[in-house]
Length: 199
View 1 (cartoon, rainbow, N blue to C red):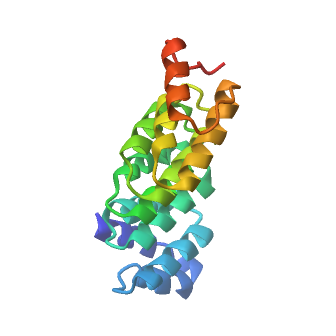
View 2: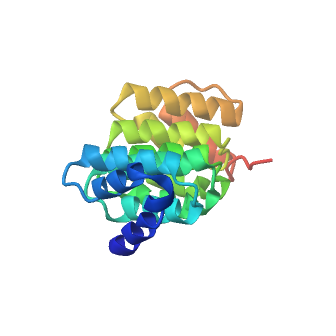
View 3: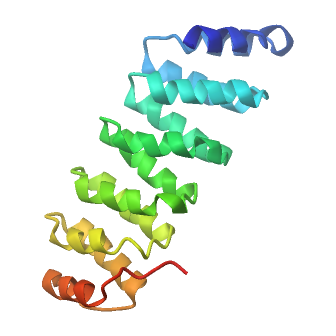
C-alpha cells in the first residue's frame, strides 16, 4: 500500500520538478519530523486529491509516530472533506493521547453531529485530562444536548478544569443552574427522564 502511494506520487515528478521527488523520499524517512514536513508539503503542492487522500489515510492508519498521525488528522479537517470523518472517529481509540486529542477536536470541526453520543461515551471512558477537555469542547460546538449524562458524571472528575467545562456545557444545554453539586444534577436528570433533545 505504501509502495503504491509512493509510486503514484512519483508520477508527478517529471511535470512538477524535484520538490515532489524530495518530499516523496522524505515519506520514508526514519525521522518523524521529515515525514511531517513531507506530508504538509505534498498536501499543499499536489493537486491530485486522490493521491493526497491516500497519503493522509496511510499516515493516520500506519505511521508509528503520534505526531504524524495527528498532523494527518489536522490536514483532513483542513480539507473539509467529510469522507475522512469515519477515520477521524476511529482515531478516538488511538493508543496515544495526542492523537485522541486531535481526533476529539476534529469531530467537532467536521460537524459530526451523528457522533454526539459516541463522544459522550468516550468522555466517560477517557483518562487523559486534555482529551477530556477537547471532547467537551466538541460536544459544546456540536450543541450536543442529548449528551447530558456524561457531562453530569464529569462533575465528579478529579480535575477542576474538566469539572468547570462540564458545568458550563450543562448550563448551556439545559438552561439550568445547579452549580457543581453532582447530587442535584443527578436528581435533575432522573426527574427529566430523557436528556434534552437537539432541535
